[in-house]
Length: 514
Image (cartoon, rainbow, N blue to C red; front, side, top):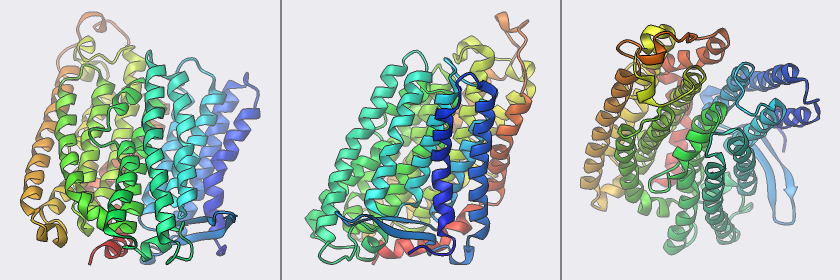
């Protein structure tokens, strides 16, 4: 079945892939043309997504729209099933916005060793893989898009990364592939367990409607397999160790897309697949997820305090912020899922912007070492310094900016977890988790304020006194302004995200709660 506008989603999804193919045949010497073509292609794809968003029926956000369902692999019953609802739409939109902004940024800033043709082709291939996971409603199709992101990100880190790029890229690849093996086994188990009762046992919608199939033991083991795949991608503590290395060594654009979108694939997988399809297993694992989430919040914050590299500090902050997302999921309530999804978008916007700033910081100082920079940034580059203060305040959860609502609502939800968890005697544990999460917010404020004190305040010292450091350039304003505006808009009017998700989240939560 292909509805009247279902083709739009397919066009948006595969236009970047076609763009990557075009990049591959362009002459390598046409450096400027390649960069401008990438901006046009990613801009065109983003324009299609804007059209999809404008035509989206927000009054019926709980239903799949722009849906396409056609046969694909008849031998195993897999179908090409795409659709978008209020849960998928914000993440899908963010994917295309960030990629477009990254293409603009790359017209001026391209990491060594250059080679824009290969770099931009990989970026657009990555875009198709990331976007596909948010609109695929067949487990096989979802898995294909999930795995597609491995190759471009591996090469982006391995070729255009920092001094330890080979180590970081291999570590990223192996960790993610390890989790994918268990996830694939769980998907196969779901298929064989559901095929007697579900017409299309690969279909995520039908599996959600038939939630609760299989024995209690099956639900537990299947959820464990999916948990490993998604938890590594989030990443949750203790599966997080690939992330700081990948972020530290990745080029700026790689870090922006990794933080802004790639990590969201894991949390989205929990919400879209693991919870509604395996509700009994989810309830059993929820307290453990909550505990690991809070450990990640506190651990990530403490690691940030210990960092001397600006970019590595931001990388560890992602571990803590994604901990709040997982804490919301662990509550197993509508409020908690809303908090998790909002936190996803807020983290993508805020931390993506932080990595843009970290990349431009390195372009100017040729170092990210906090002690070497030594303060005085607000004197040497007042506009850049002001942006760093603004985005850091959003990241530490200042009310009125994007970072506040996801973390606050996650703590609120964890204080009142699902009735089944309360009945099982976990209310005391969840109260402790709220307290632990609150401690994490204090630590987050501490390390960001300390960072701003060390690099922003005071007078320039040493060689920086006479050094000519360019303030924010025009191309940076162009690529950063949409994110800066979103940070404020999401803080002042969080309904722009909560309102889109509301109906879809309510429908989803009803599928896995009594």
